[in-house]
Length: 245
Image (cartoon, rainbow, N blue to C red; front, top):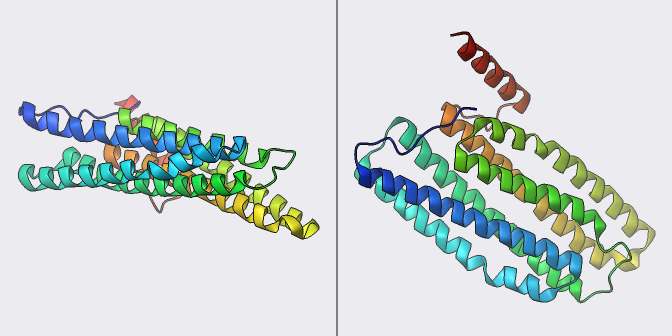
């Protein structure tokens, strides 16, 4: 497992500044995780109050994004970081952007929970969203954990879940389209489920992005537009080369 240490400076204050930024990113991630979990619960349990809380609390995520962004700008201007420190701040700025957008998607799911709570619930209790929601939550949690530990191997492992999320999402879309064709009376409710599924799939995509930022932070390699199989092969080759030295 390859990680980095951001607390290696002779200036204790500089170390504190970077650690504060890191902790705030993880706090923001924790808020997004809670938003996501609550939004899914709101739909599955038909609880509009939980959905309303998700919508109302979105401002907390937005406020943290602004706060962290300002702190990063201050460090860039005052400390003029280079190498790992610079990559860390770039990764943070990108990560909080994705976290804020995850929060927006969770808010949308919360709004769908409010609307679906007012409709007659199907016998399956929206089971099509349950597995997709669990996958999305796991990806977000693991991506944040990889970021916290700057763990490339964990990031690579988490990124692989995206394919399963995509397969699950496509399966849900096919099922729901068939359901609407068979019974047009349920089209409004089915569309809301589709929009919720789309938001969950996008959240997983954002989690994938965070994994890519971890690779960039540790390896200095931008893998955003690179085949993940190729990335894994390159990392294995680097690890084997390191073992031979």
